[in-house]
Amino acid sequence: MKINRWTAELNPNFKIIENLFVNEGLEYREVKVASGAKIVNQRAPMTEVIQVISGELIFNLSGNQFALRPGDRIEMAANTMYSYNNLKQDESTFLTAYKL
Image 1 (cartoon, rainbow, N blue to C red):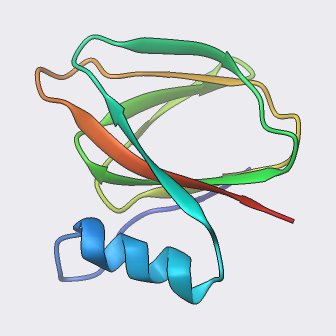
Image 2 (image 1 turned 180 degrees about the vertical axis):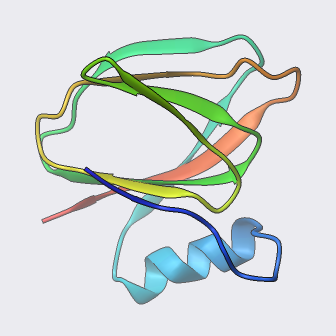
């Protein structure tokens, strides 16, 4: 697992994060997470990249919990089991892609 926190002076938005994925050659999909939603027992067959566009998500990997905020990115090895939830009142959005 690798986490990169957003430190740029610009606030992250869809276009900026989309360009980051495209420049890496990643085919992404956009995921919206409703307020109060909890997604459990996710697993990807390949390395998965997730980068938050808006909102805040609480991730759980092997019992370790941490928050991902706009611009933050996580890269997880294939077959990593994870869960996440949106505890905020607003919808959260992120892009996700698989790396070979």
